[in-house]
Image (cartoon, rainbow, N blue to C red; front, side, top):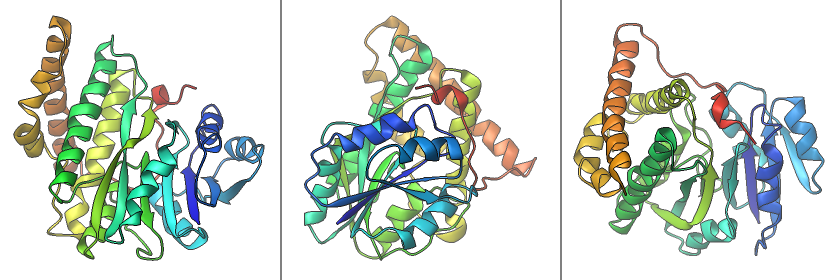
Length: 293
């Protein structure tokens, strides 16, 4: 049996599509579908779908909710996704397939941007997903190396990890815990999840800083954590490949602006942490331009 868990926070506009993308699949394994959310609006829509279970999230953040769900879920395999995304055809079967190998402990799905490529932020979303995430994860998985996954779609064996810290990125610390225990991490590139990305620069910056902050604390708990998301790694691994991605002059221009935007983001993050002492804390924090249905 598998447990498919959707974590959500005030997602009444998108939760239906997230649930529907799962229910319409021909899933080969027996499964339970759980929606974890703290708000009544999302809960009521979720429960209108036959067979969906609701888990009352206390509203203290995603990692806090996951620690409770580890005890609640009944499946041998736990699949996690979010209430503001939707998965592609046959994604569930694809993400559980690697677990046929007993050495696999954790599997990451592939993020694909829903945004149009004809705007600067839309183009950035495709470049970062295709070059920054997909290419890196695919190559590291082939080499048997550790890589961080995406919380938009990931799966793990149950009853191995009981709890995670609240002030780090769950999609980084969880695969690392499995890797440290001797399990391999797999990348299911055919298990696709479609993600709506920010359409405003302020939202883009807010989202990217929050993601980066969640990674800066990882070595507080794991001093030898092989960190993927850092400014240094972006330069070493991405400086050349990103220039193979543009298809026209406009996209080359947008790629150049992205380089400066990423530099600004990392400098801004460094200032907030060293001067203002603002660090990542678990908690639901909405990025409004990603919440459109």
